[in-house]
Length: 281
Image: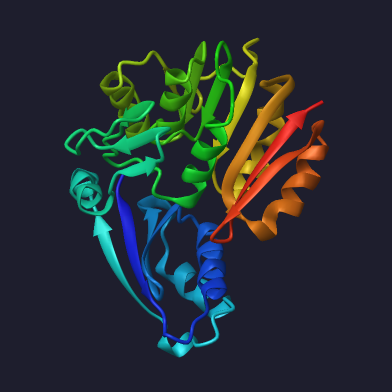
């Protein structure tokens, strides 16, 4: 899949929450990942089939950015064959104390409990983003032995691979993107773990397989639209961990999940991004 990379440059007068709100608005029009460059600039990535410069301009116009005249952006088209180069240049390894180290295969090994090799190719999920990092930290406090785990919207499958290394009995990783599907399979092999990787549409909605832990690091609209199908795949007493949305979205997600028998369990906030954990009653 081809992508558009849009570099946004804001004035020094812009406040951090204005930038976060702009990212949230961009996520609503198809952008699915963001990389901060400094306090006043960031990169945003959107699949080619969802990209519209007119929509970007309208989003800027309707945003709460105070100094719109100073906001500039540059657009770059990225063919899928160039994606490796982009991520080789922009994705450093991530260390979570002595718990785990997320690294590319050409980066040095560190002595940790779980060493995870992620060669991201075109898939997002290298643990550099706060949402992925919060889920990994949440998982570090869990007993995964013998559990069944769903990694929905898996990207690189970093979360599913970690769950398997932590002792999960069965791990299913699902994504809508064929490149992510191939990348997840490759990363599973690189880590010598047995994970079941599927494309959306391949999983059987009538399957009797239900999960003890259901991870979904996806944007708000997709979470809201698919909550009913997620709920069907979670065991009574199972945990649903959601991220990929902002702190201001928590109330809406709580209201929606209550309709499907979930109750609040835990939450975390980082850089205005949120993690919400819920228990199925």
